[in-house]
Length: 425
Ligand SMILES: *Cc1c(COP(=O)(O)O)cnc(C)c1O
Image 1 (cartoon, rainbow, N blue to C red):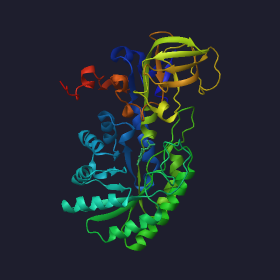
Image 2: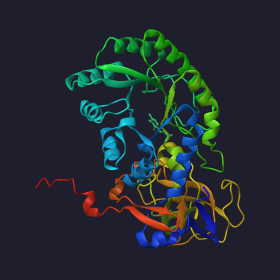
Image 3: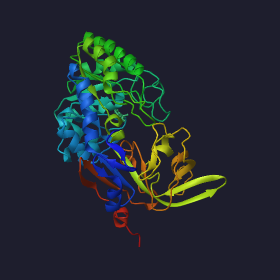
């Protein structure tokens, strides 16, 4: 996270003081480091070169068009989970021929849109979905490229709302079902089996789940080939963890050490769908203190960043580091410890919900009205999940590139919030 560092008590993104951006564009404001995005993508590209990977950046982690442009320019492909995301990739000038399309509920329109754009493969999640892809492909005189999404029943030890590869999740299918569907594909002139897909959950900080998954993948590819499939892809999804707390997130090469040998042994190419690993630490959310109060024996910092901006604490009990943008107290590596000059505070937003908070019982230096606050690791599932709840306009986004910066999403206006609504009078 060296792209976000304090210089003489003031937070910088690369070479730009963050407070200057907050003054120019207002708050809440997302500030991205282009260098971080590129560095993290390159770490994955380099770590997996031995298995000729296709890195499908997971659009759902952050779908801003400029971020997609940065990814496309650096040679990334894309993982999409809706027709809307595919549309964004096209608008950003991305190559659609290496796209993986995931999700349990693809509509006919979305399937048609993807076939029209010659994507690499659909990650198929059920038999009726496979049947729809076949029907739609037949109607277009095309062959639907598919990967079967396995649920390998591996516990990736994530938050219960972000585990996806355990028995009983809505995602994927067990091996018996996959084997049946593989037979069906073989008999269907409008389908072609290209690979198998597994996405275990997120964020995953240990390599063990991937090691198990790739082993399973290797066996299954062998079995599919024995059936007569020309299958060449193992797609291990996303889920690589990052450092939200201190430096707990492993480097991509650590995951590669357990994944690459298995993919090589299977004589396959590797697809990955990293989102958070690339975007997670690429941004801070800047907010501004409105009020402070002491009530019920607690200190509250009320600021203008809320759960409609950053939903992760409310939705996943997620932890984000936060620290004043300007302060004489040095931010320690471990912000959960007791810190000299700090007292615990709940950092809350203006939304009328008790779950509207960015941090609870967090040691923070004194803060007063108008102070800027930085919430770290906000690039993934931050702006992408933001909403207009409480009729709050979504914040602006700025991309910093060394000493320069560009507005990549302007702040919404109140008129835009109500633009789709029709009068009944
Ligand atoms: C969400 C998702 C990803 C991305 O997960 P990250 O943790 O952001 O890397 C990849 N693949 C699929 C199928 C997903 O649903």
